[in-house]
Image 1 (cartoon, helix red, strand yellow):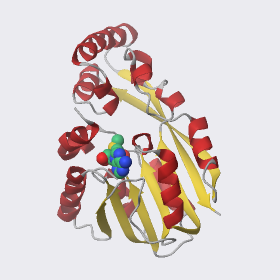
Image 2 (cartoon, rainbow, N blue to C red):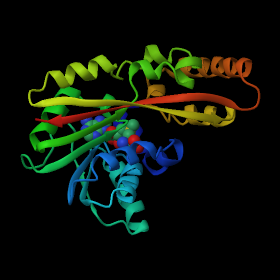
Image 3 (spheres, protein in one colour):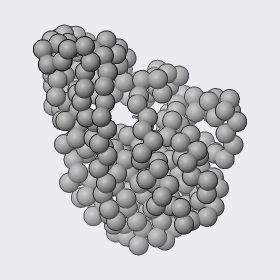
Image 4 (cartoon, protein in one colour):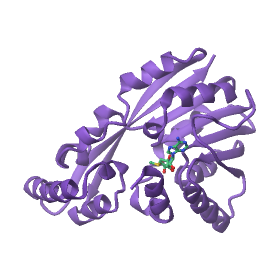
Length: 254
Ligand SMILES: C[S@@+](CC[C@H](N)C(=O)[O-])C[C@H]1O[C@@H](n2cnc3c(N)ncnc32)[C@H](O)[C@@H]1O
């Protein structure tokens, strides 16, 4: 299955398969609290689970542009926002690498859990062009290093070796350094205590909640899932506990 088909398939139930954290949105909200009438774009927005939180926590947003190259994800976003009476948004079907905004028109660009699907250098170049001077880019992702420390990286065979798309922290730094007029203002790590049952974890993997699982052949996946169950069974009793880590890179346009 191609990645686009995968996201189309998951679009109606994506939210139910992922854990949505409020901390990064509160953090962004504090940093942006001094700006009025924000024009902000979320790139690779998916079904809008983080856009809903942005509109909930940031009362200084004028328009939120929800950008994704998958029409089914945008359809899901639109449906849930209409049902909830959310108004201050526009949906835009576009690739991250060629953003369809006028030059220097946005205050802020955010992206959650999506940069590993982009050509990061091209995306940053395009983002810089459409951002106002002193504008912000917030990139929220797990790095290659952090991916190794979560429940899948530790116990699901070949998870780290298969996931070749995720950027290391140094990759992110290098890509930003390669774009003239952008710089990293700060980096913030988020750490989350998680708990689940083995049944729930198996359900998530079988539903390919991380697209990493698409990178396994059906036979490899079956065998790896069997070994994952054994590994978890050996290590934990009824509840499975672990930590998830994410990084937020805060970039500015000079
Ligand atoms: C892992 S999902 C994350 C969605 C959302 N940000 C979230 O955290 O729930 C990645 C999203 O990026 C989108 N995407 C992948 N490649 C893209 C590209 N080159 N341009 C725009 N969107 C892209 C996918 O369609 C998908 O909706």
